Length: 380
Length: 257
Ligand SMILES: Cc1cc2nc3c(=O)[nH]c(=O)nc-3n(C[C@H](O)[C@H](O)[C@H](O)COP(=O)(O)OP(=O)(O)OC[C@H]3O[C@@H](n4cnc5c(N)ncnc54)[C@H](O)[C@@H]3O)c2cc1C
Ligand SMILES: Cc1cc2nc3c(=O)[nH]c(=O)nc-3n(C[C@H](O)[C@H](O)[C@H](O)COP(=O)(O)OP(=O)(O)OC[C@H]3O[C@@H](n4cnc5c(N)ncnc54)[C@H](O)[C@@H]3O)c2cc1C
Image (cartoon, rainbow over all chains, first blue to last red; front, side, top):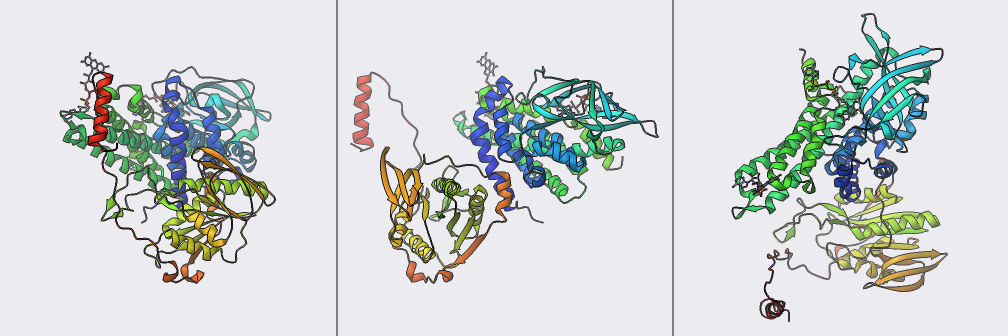
């Protein structure tokens, strides 16, 4: 056993921490208030190689590991969860499937710009009538001559308005058991028939772009099929497993921020002639927050470590996502409580943590779905 | 061009520092590259990129200093040297540091040495000038601009907020002031490549130095934190009365007048 980060991982942590504090943090309130996706920050993150951490250099990546990537997501989300979400979605959902399942050609053409940070990717799975139940996907792709013709509608898709490539899941037929066969396609956003609109007015994660995609007779060459046509369902389950590690890391970042802000405030705020941090009721809240943050981080790191070692990590990723995101929500809630009336005000930022944290219990598999995944792993 | 950067690992003065038994408690402190040395690293890289050559970062420290050296390599330096004094040296001062580096530079082909203006821990600002003196090369402290053309060097130096323009020649030692440049972040590919760059570790033995040669010229008597800042006081009443009270407080209480 060794709980110490490697020198590289420590350096990634220091670097991203500093970058987040200096470049992102001063903008976090404005990003939330104006619900504006910070294009310039993503450009800088791309230049620093953050968008390519877990991909090899030959595909434009930085040659790092999942753990370094999780550390980067945590540090960015600690100052701005919206930026953290768009970052995690770009890497785990937009780029990773191409790395996992793409052909050499696809990696060169589509992964390289994403990994080197000159473009963003987006992953369209959810549909108006297929959320938790992705098997209910209604979008279809029909092979005609050398092209697939895709028709359907996707909703709640992160980064789509700013993306260059979309990965779209669609039904391509039925398998022997009569079940829908779902496949994934790489769809450049400028393909005729693709319409992307982002009109959602969100509770939190307001600086992260969320969009609706309408696909109307969209034709892509058959070479844009990603991976095995008959294994699309398995493929996105694997992709989501990986994504859960990063959403867990996002939760750790918010929870860490909630803890730091609360501790500082509790020491400074005086009521009844004393710092409120001297009241046991407040101390217990802080103690719980500190404990849960540490446990959540350990679980996220373990899931990332398992993935890096090539071991199965599906259950651990669900543990990490479930525990870390619920920790984020609890910690943010307690942070508002500790701040009293001030905590209710935007200026103190903890109310934003609470709004942002709520998404984590919904996106990339709701808390209920995580429990289903875990129960299935237990053999239920 | 052969460019060397003198780099120090220091505790982060923006984080909490505690003193235990007259020593800074290293376990609870955060360690960083001395911020002024970051300007030196950045400048070295920019000069190398403009004129060609090689940047070597040098530190005197122990194994823990490797992280700061690797960070400098990740930022873009080519080589690093750790002069590990962990086993051989208990207490050193600016004299010690300068003597060790004099021995290190002995026989080396050097065009430019960059150091920080001060190290934020002890803040003496002496190491750079002392080394230049021992090596017999010119030095300019607190520089905010460095232009090199062949061996001719044109420098802007910060003098308490004013600018002094100085012409000199290579080989040269400079110490870097805030404003010289905007230090970059190490990039992710840079961090990954850093582990493949050469990091040489040498000991005092390798430099033919004995303890006597480098024995500190100063003694540290005590280390303590500044007194806790007492809560401020807001004076009230007429401006005239406020001024009177303030003057009286400055004279009698604070005794600064
Ligand atoms: C800001 C944001 C960003 C998003 N980004 C993306 C993206 O980039 N790509 C993408 O494809 N999707 C994205 N999504 C969609 C997200 O993944 C879905 O919202 C999520 O999977 C839940 O689906 P749903 O909204 O349809 O809810 P539903 O599936 O309708 O769930 C409603 C409720 O029912 C519960 N429930 C459903 N089934 C069960 C069951 N079997 N047992 C017990 N409880 C159940 C759920 O847990 C939930 O509480 C995003 C969503 C948001 C809000
Ligand atoms: C939208 C809004 C509307 C409001 N409207 C009104 C209004 O109309 N009129 C009005 O007068 N006020 C109003 N308030 C103020 C509100 O009543 C106070 O915010 C509330 O009483 C808490 O006080 P505080 O914000 O100073 O928090 P604090 O008293 O500083 O409390 C901070 C934290 O410390 C805890 N704490 C404090 N003392 C102890 C203790 N002894 N033991 C354990 N824990 C302790 C608190 O429970 C809280 O978690 C409003 C506030 C808001 C946000």
